[in-house]
Amino acid sequence: MQSEPLSFMGHARDRHRAGPIAGNGGLHLLFPAGERSVRRALSASVAAFHDMGVDRDGCDFAELVLAEVLNNVVEHAFTDRGHGIIELEAWRAGNALSLRIRDDGMPMPGERLPAAQRHDLTVETHELPEGGFGWGIIHDLTRDLTYRRDGARNELTFAIDFAEFDAST
Amino acid sequence: MELGIRDTGDTRVVHVGEARIDAAVAIQFKDQMRDLIVGGPNRVILDLSAVTFVDSSGLGAIVAAMKQAVGPQQLELAGLTRSVAKVFALTRMDRVFTIHDSVDAVLAGPANAE
Image (cartoon, rainbow over all chains, first blue to last red; front, side, top):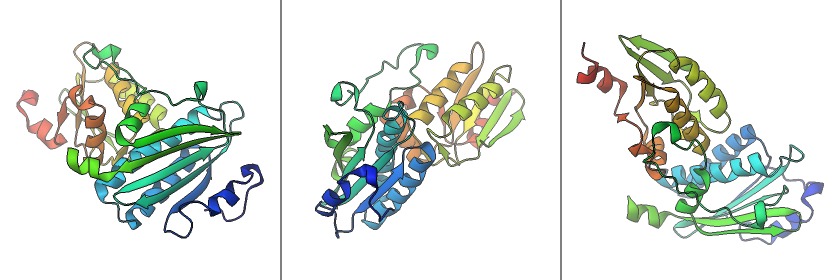
């Protein structure tokens, strides 16, 4: 975790201090946009969720959603300059986790959330999709999913509600 | 990435020796699987019992591997851990693949009897 403000984050740190997680047992990570960094961030996040009292199933779903969100940022937001910074915040809110992911990369196409792609899986094997599962997973496992472009940054916020998983499994 | 190969009769078992099939290794996994499937035995069992995490990139790579199996060849899955089974259920890919409880269950099964 970074404790020194990074110049390219602008006033993110100042805003963060007034945020909902300050001093509240939340998680705050800053890391470079890369596949290996995402792995480390996921590992740190799952450990933190566990410490917040999230059970094993909840941690599994949270790790999957975060992997999809973070890999999406790595694959798409920095294709112009090849590097960037991702900021992840998470805090427990009742039986849910609230998450906020920011990056200083390019906006999502049309500055809107991509829709979930629903694939027809009854096709012949050679026509099966090899990608496009990510947003479906994100939409299915989260609620209050919101994207906004904030100046030069992307901000994605959502909650993972563990009560919903208990009811469906 | 570490893939262990064991051939028994017309069945090849590929054991994934890593905990994650994710965006960081998906392309590598796909390429290695292609080499193990193309020209290989008719039945390839992908043993996922040591894998605890698969994301959508990893899932796509497993689908890509299945598509390499053509004609009489088939790729089947075995030994899905709890967290990996969730990803297959969530994306409904559990309906697309033949999934066995374990490699032992496959090799003991009638389909492999000579």
